[in-house]
Length: 246
Image (cartoon, rainbow, N blue to C red):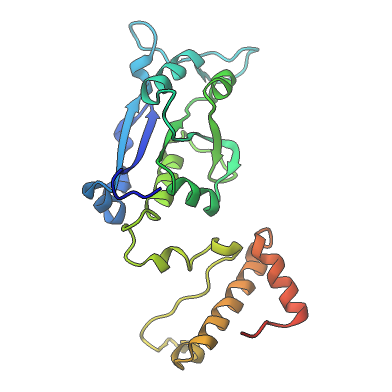
């Protein structure tokens, strides 16, 4: 799908819609939002709350600390924002979700957009997760006060990949996690700084040598810092058999 005719569409369900667009309203994402490359709608879950006080939560079944977001309230908010024929995936930001990866981000960016639910309190009633087909997504092994900051992370990662947002398409290809590797080191002027010089290979004009050096550096950094990534195994095998030559 292309985004030339239809903007990439994000809908956020939150108790704090005023948190959006936040930092996404400036820089590249903000410019793209102004141009209509993507759209953002933040909807207040409390509009579907119960009673005079628009209650959205209740005590956890079985006892325990905190409160739980009600399934009937959240389902009503989802149904109002995303009809059955809405092709967009429904995401729930949750520390127990599958870790967000660059591959998943790229898939999301190539689609029509996303509906993102921002949890609060102790969590969300399990029944609405199953009943509305929510995909739980985590941005890391830690707990935030709510899903809003995590949703901003997902949106930023997706929007920057939309056609026309970044100046050069290559910028989105040669970076960390593309190809299962961390990104190689970067340098710019001055050539010498505090006794540290730019590696000679980057100034020699030999593009094949530069590409080889960058690949070797990416493999080295990945093996040292993120051995869990897909590219780390390739780096380890090359260290045994020797670097390949093109």
